Amino acid sequence: MANKRLIARLDIKGENLIKGIHLEGLRIIGSPNEFAKRYYMQGADELIYMDCVASLYGRNNLSDILKNATRDIFIPMTVGGGIRSIEDAAHLLRSGADKVAVNTAAIANPSLISEISRRFGSQCMVLSIEAKHHGNDHWEAYTDNGRESTGLDVVEWVKRGVELGAGEILLTSIDKEGTRKGFDVALIKAVTEAITVPVIASGGMGKPEDIIEVVQKSGADAVAMADILHYNRGTICDVRSIAFDSGIELRDYDCG
Amino acid sequence: MTVDEVVVVDYGMGNLLSVQRGLEHCGASVTVSADHKVILEASKVVLPGVGAFIDGMNELNRQGLTETLKEVANKGVPLLGICLGMQMLLEESEEFGNSKGLGLISGNVIAIPMTTISGEPQKIPHIGWNALVIPEEKNSWIGTLLKDIEPGEAGYFVHSYMASPSNLEHHIANCIYGGRTIPAVIGNKNVFGCQFHPEKSGEVGLKILRNFLAL
Image 1 (cartoon, chains in turn yellow, orange):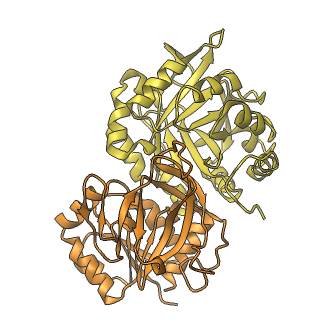
Image 2: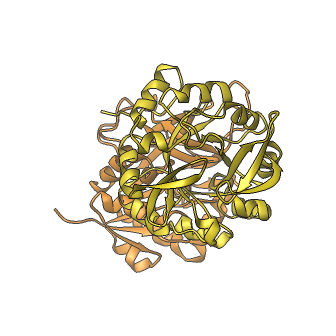
């Protein structure tokens, strides 16, 4: 069993770290790399940088932020938002990213998943999914930061994405995102049971203890945290120590 | 203190920026280059790389860098291969049929088995943080690239193939995946290899880079 990973998620608009509720109503939190550096020092296993308005404007603006991050942050970084082509992916990977997360463009053009996976390896190709509950254990995939419905069933789409070469799934619950009410365990469980690639659970972490249920009941391989960290309701050290005490296997990191 | 002139070999494969920044963070002056003359004048050489073995070797051969790197090693200049760069230090790889490596460390590169030691299917590639352990035949990391690192501290791995140096003396650190031992750091005199990414392994990785720069 691989170690569970604790991931800090940074949603970015322009030059600012922001946070919303249900992926909307965005509030400015501060400078992305100041927060990123803090999370690195707390022992984050990875970082996710998500350009929240990129799909809307048709481009990802994170390359300068990433290049700056590589000066003093030395953990894997995933970048997402507005990635439409191999060239977009290559540009972000050259800027210091290790993986790219694709949602909107993958739904519009699923072969992009195969192209990125073939060119850079499946470990590089993260399929990002924004899921909204549509009743009776059914979730629908959304694009453009939870604004556009696609009609795609999340579990079916995830299976197809993995067949096409996605090496990892970033699964965000729009219903739970920013609510601090805990993860959508049923959603995450439905996805982890359908595929074998790692799943990052995102959306709803309100307190450090929330990690226990999502890992133990849904089989998530990694947990993405935003709000809880940005508003300092818990540090990555707190989460690591609570998870460790519950018998969850994690990287041995000395929080000092 | 003199500043190390480190050359990161740019043969078109790998996250060069992160490697460069990691070394700079540790105090090195870094040049990213594929120029033979620049590489041969370096006080330290780093060979990064992500991708398939045969593609990497084809690129090194095409750019005439194979002989340059052998010359670097023979001159006694410290050389560090990272991930694919480590695997290419060996004699040959079975990835996509047998292909020849640089042969600076004896042994070959083999696929990580698809099943664990107890026969369960396991995820390939091996991705993520994994603990570094001291090989059975060694008793400490004193005087090695892992000086000041505690056994159990972790590095960040992403790979489907593993190096298998034939001389146990060349195994410096291992990790355990699916119950099997995978070489994580190897070394033969001035030639070293690191299977995980020190530039992505937090303070543990930076310690390794600093130890390399201090050689």
